[in-house]
Image 1: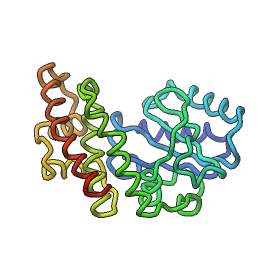
Image 2: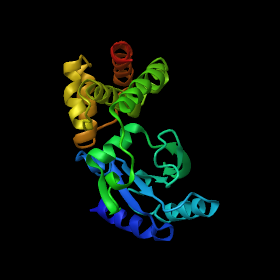
Image 3: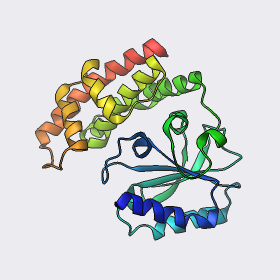
Amino acid sequence: MPTDALLARFLDALAPVDPVAVWAHGSLAGGDYQEGRSDLDLIAVLPSPVRPTTVRTVVSLHRRLRAEPLADKLHCSYLTPDTLDDAGHRHLTWAHGHVMRRTVTPVTRRELHAFGRVLRGASPAGVLPPVPDGVLAEFVVRDQRDYWRPAVDRARLWTQDIWVDLGLITFARAGVTLREGRLVSKREALELLPGLGAPVEVVEDIRRRRYDEPSAPPTDEWTARRSALTRSYLGPAIDELVAAYG
């Protein structure tokens, strides 16, 4: 399986930085992973603070993996002992083929505690501080209010599959977290969306692209219609969610 081979090579390549732990989260850990479509979302915990030599080593090891199948989907954030408990800290991260700084959000941290997959070393429970329910709920509301709601008004974004997919799925997942205090998979979120009033034809479009065999690219007419349907639903839906829980 290409995913298993890539993970094995990645873990071997990490030897120079001697990680305390390596974990998977997201679809890879939550049982909804679709090889070739899903990202491989990883966290590595380093034994000491990041130094310039650490950055160079991380960049080098990821570049050496570029020829591997699925390597472009492997994303990893590198936590250190001095940053483990700071959900706002921007950690050294490799994603989308280059190095960046990115937070490890309360949602990701809760995922790791709830169903994180240990690839090497210590478990999240033994290393990562837990996420209080209030902190998780506050983050989810803020993400919907400050990130997704303004994005709905940027029409050009919603001609892209990724915005339609993540916008609707993230909204459904946010609602479950706020109402029930639990996390759900993307598959479960898709199943919930029609009952939340989301446009059924758009939900079915997402499901086909995520779980069925690849099909022909969408027509310009459908892309425009899908965008309009998604935005007309998601804007008021987010406003209602934020009003109820913000």
